[in-house]
Every structure is written in C-alpha cells, then in structure tokens.
Image (cartoon, rainbow, N blue to C red):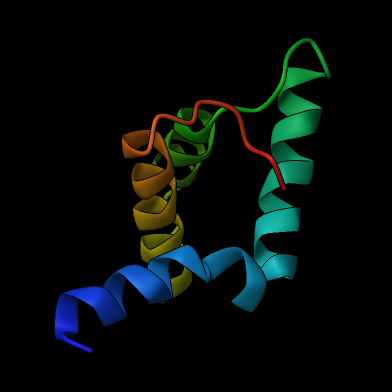
Length: 78
C-alpha cells in the first residue's frame, strides 16, 4: 500500500475513529441551524474555521469533508 492510499484510507475512516468529536460538531451545528435544513459538509468546514478550532482532529475533519464533497456528496450522513 503506497502513502497516498494510506492517507485516503485514514481520511475515509475519520468518522469511525472520532465519532464523539464529529457528534459534538454536529450537535453545535444543529443548534445553529435549528433544524431548518440538513447539515452540509461545507457547514462543518465553515464552523471549524469560524470557531478557530486548531489541532489534528480539526484538520482531519476538514480533509474528510473535502473528500466527501469531491465524491459528490453534499449533506452529512452520519
């Protein structure tokens, strides 16, 4: 397995490895959006950036969201 394949696998596995982190972000976004619409991957990215979140989990979360959007997905299915 080459380095790129390992990186993609790690990005794909983010929700499985950090479910509590993702759930906490989703709960905060649900409060902000007030259930008016489904949460989009771009909402998560904007929240992380606006909230000034730093660290590996935040970076991995942004990469995961970007990966999902490049795959053509819009709404978070978690």
